[in-house]
Length: 272
Image (cartoon, rainbow, N blue to C red; front, top):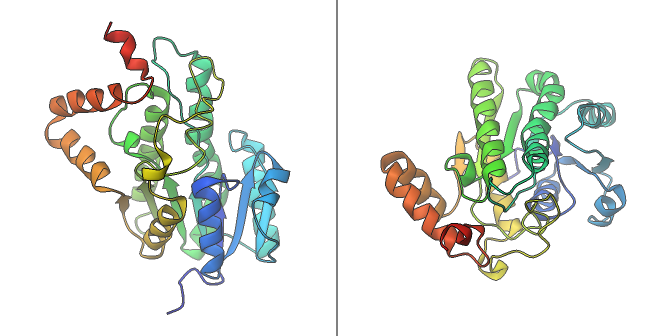
């Protein structure tokens, strides 16, 4: 059966690696015309085989003018936008006590403002085509995670923004949704910010035990095609969301214990 994304124009932010790259490749496989952006254009282009249905564009989503130029370039090339997937994002791993405020600001600029900027400029086209705006969120958007205050704040903000937008768009034919992957094999943890804003470089997780970016991307695009309200991936993720709703104090303790056990956990500072 033909995909409903066939011949649709799909924008994916943060397409150089990980989930973003997998989303772009999967959408191309479903017959879509795909536009991806990244801060490093050479890296972005080298991530994909040449394809007439692919547009690579240099953009930093934390910059309003870059987001506007990206959406305008897509509309100029293909006449509009049907689907926007706000995927670009970075993470962090540091106690709030130790984190430089510039780290929190950078996460908000990319994870939250990047989604706001791109949604703002794509919205007129998506309204015309009764399309979809989606955000790649996280369990951190439902449940604050220790050592990740800026990341959690940015994902809570994204989800609040998208929920309000979805309600505004209720009778327009535009669908607004977000997807919360569990721990997925991607580059986001390797470039996660430490307390001083430098990249973490090494992930504390066993990447071999995580969901692949390709599997994650397939679930996201299935959700987009079926216009799901929200998608929470993995049993662990669903359990965390429900525990936080039903037993919030218990969830505090369980989440603390979980992150205390990770290699080189910053929480060990409070255990001495």
